[in-house]
Image (cartoon, rainbow, N blue to C red; front, side):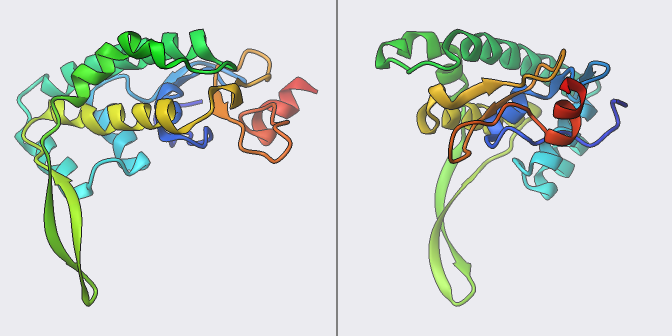
Length: 191
């Protein structure tokens, strides 16, 4: 699988999709966030950052700055991987709040604010953020991870059973019998 291949969004939760931004599906390992451009491409495909904001951040970034943010994103991903592995398939205890300190520190940096906007013929209150620097690209990733923690039942988080596959997903199927990240990729390699 080429590192230029489209990112995989199979987890049914964007936070887990980011965890899967490095993966070993049936063949060779691939890291979609290997550098700053890879991170920007992944965020674009995940639709976590508005396109115009991505273009603006890329145009304002200093040389090497996006690569350093990608390094931080990979560190965050590996912290989250450890957290998910420790709790995969079990219930989250509210006492784990201390374990979530790295994620909470990231979320505290957010520059989100509310504003009244027009949507069609209606006025709505929307939340937006100031995208002051490339580091702000980490905020929507942190939010996606936080949503996994507070919205998903960790007893339904699973690792793919495909031979050598490293992908994780939320099993939202009715009978909770999902076994593979992708039936076409991993089930075939298992049979």
